[in-house]
Image 1 (cartoon, rainbow, N blue to C red):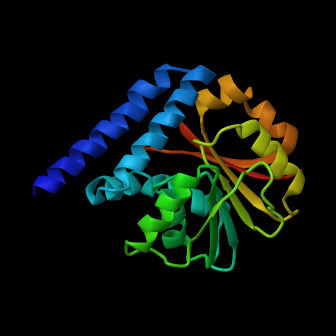
Image 2 (image 1 turned 45 degrees about the vertical axis):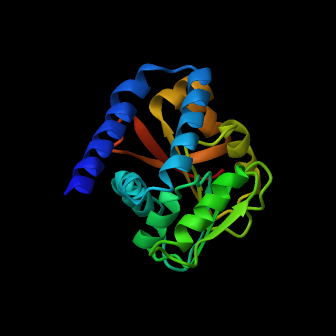
Length: 217
């Protein structure tokens, strides 16, 4: 009972922070601060089952929509850029799509070590693969679906690189916030320089979070 109450309290506090505090700031410097905050939090929370399970559950609704948006099948090869220490998106994509080949990368070596340790010690898909790599030069030619997550650094450079190197039939899910899209990347016009914007979805649980389905121009 105590753990359930703590889990609910953590979930409530996390959502309040994402929905009501974080959106009030929209400078690139604050995003950098927020990114580091999430990185530190994940590296701590990965050691506490109550926190990491709650953290994963917060993303259930969003990832379900992203999987449906990109129409992932069990035969698709999926790349997730910026998985973090608690690879919530990787785990949930595996559960909701049954894709057999999911590769998750992160530029932070400690995050990759944590992600491997976490998935190996839990009842998650043992076929998930994790690699220490840079999204700005990682080979993407074999992947059917590519996730570019919000917390990554140099989103603009990674988006540009992906647009020039993905195969013609690939689908890209780019997760961001409306505020970050406008004030850091310059709005939809930036995305349209490199991709065709097919559709987008908004999260009902994570306020201001939006995911775009992008395809090669």
